[in-house]
Image (cartoon, rainbow, N blue to C red; front, top):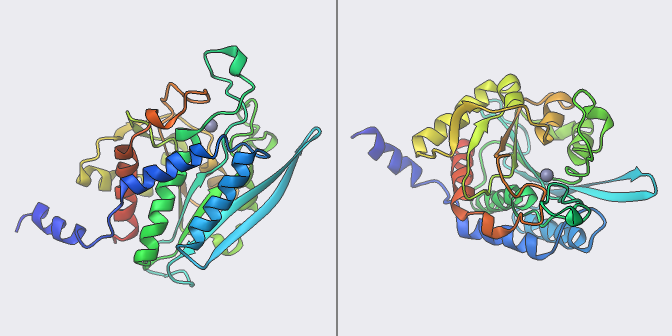
Length: 297
Ligand SMILES: [Zn+2]
């Protein structure tokens, strides 16, 4: 029996990631409208995510917090679903799987300057990571992982105006993950994985630099699985440092964490970040790798 045959038999017992279902979650989020904090779309999506997660696990918890900037007062919510054994297993690594569910209030990269103050649809930047995790949650309900897995939807990732390196604590990016990391408590896991902008039709996920620095063993594991499965979307070359929610998990919660992201997306922070620029196949590549990670060794 060769490796391929053996692996097929093993793999066929795994729950199957359904990319059509995942893509429907992406489209549904976009149909709610832009999900910038305070908007109607934000409220509708919050309710949708809570309802969806509750259909997969009784262990859904909310972190409500507020953020004030000038006269604007944002009410933000991290949405958390817990799967697997209550007590962390000593043999099997536990994981946080996270994505941000808010979308940017300003399309400040739009080719048309008239659009710079309008909110983005966020099909890729926001909805794609959430879509994959909702489909993962369905699989976890079908077959509970034998390790602890915490699915987190972070709010307030994309409220930053300018990014100044070295001033990560003083800017408005990553609000939800910063709050979560400061209140980590029983949510502490062995590793964290953040999904962001993984729906691009032309998906290329490079090895992001903070990830390589802080969790090289997890990077190797993920890329090893992708190679076995033949997903060339996972590129072998290192990428750049990207400020994303894994920053908070790494530096504020002390959880070695990686970011799966493709920042090379022409529609990033524009009004053109719409579902037609995304692909179910890209969601499948990421979803399949995560299925093999969570149900694997
Ligand atoms: Zn963004």
